[in-house]
Length: 260
Image (tube, rainbow, N blue to C red; front, side, top):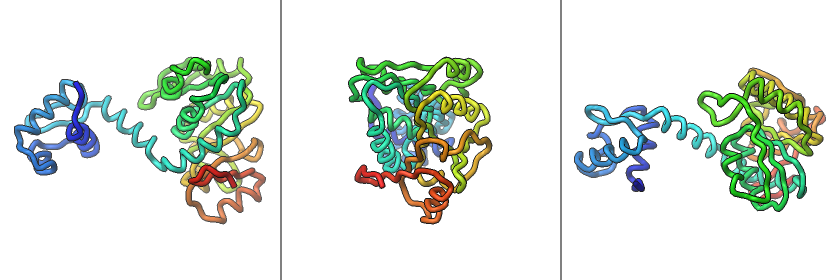
């Protein structure tokens, strides 16, 4: 069944609010309660929502999908600019490591037209984005599927990384402080990223400006030890100056896909 535009909007609204009544939805869309009930029935049959006595609540699966899509859409123009700039640093025939961030997912989309690459990743969305590109070999690192996120991690993932050597790695960050220290919110992912950057000849951090001047739970490297930070978006000028004084090679991608 193909869902119509109103039904797709209802799905997003139900997730956003957690639970919505038939009356509220009917008022929101200017249609009858009977029409909304038919919409909810169709969505329930698709597994998108769970019907309640007077309305609907979101399923766990829809909640997960919505959260991931929301992350993808955050600062989307900046991520696109970063991905375009990063793709220019990838040479044909190289092996490329991509972590499971949404910025590296944007980069994977930019690499789809390449004629000869090997992409190594822990991200299920990245693997899916490249699986139909016959000229690109995809190596999906094994491990446990993380709860609430579409990627793999754990001891097996880390062990697999120890046996690999890639030409270049692009890794995201939940924070980069003014001294160039790079952080992730998860101890488990930080441990995996430490091994990923060790397994690559060249390493770039890809992070929009909202991550700069911030810290998170676990540190996994120092940007000045790598080839550089590719970023985009608005940040205080002093942030960039501090990073450069710390020895970080800051590459700012603008919305016209240039790098400064």
